[in-house]
Length: 239
Image (cartoon, rainbow, N blue to C red):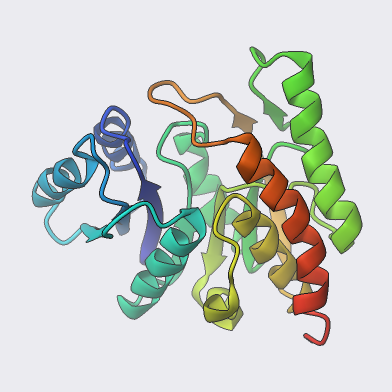
């Protein structure tokens, strides 16, 4: 199986080399990485090229002219992975909030479903134990809010740690996706459900980033809340 992971980056010069090293120690025979960098001013894009040179044929680096958003980064990476012939395509953060050791479990889960989600909100899953109560409540409520409005069966609809079978990802209308922040996760979860794709969840511990600065902001959270209602209208006729 050819497995490709898409990793969007913006100012991740501290995390990227550690992430690449960790991923290539996993017991996965054919792993390819696609780094989508948004012209990071800290030199992440240039570092990605250096890392790619050390893994010939195993890494692709895509340079974009500026900070164009998480959603379009994933869409660009997904399209590239499909064009390269990847059989399984995954997505994850570069900041170690998603546990690297769980990647093989997501791959294995695809034996029984079409989309596998690294889930914080099923039995065995959890969020960073150092988070204050208000942050845990906000994260849980945001997930509940999107699930309830869109009537989604999966427990973690805002998760950004996922793995798709090639055929499942090909069915998702990537060119129609307009969410360009963390609401991208909700939109793709909604499309997964509306298209009838089978989904399974693998419990994970979601840790706070180890290095660097979080990209989350109040503006992004408000945009995501509004976007949930838009999705009901945009995909109202989809079957």
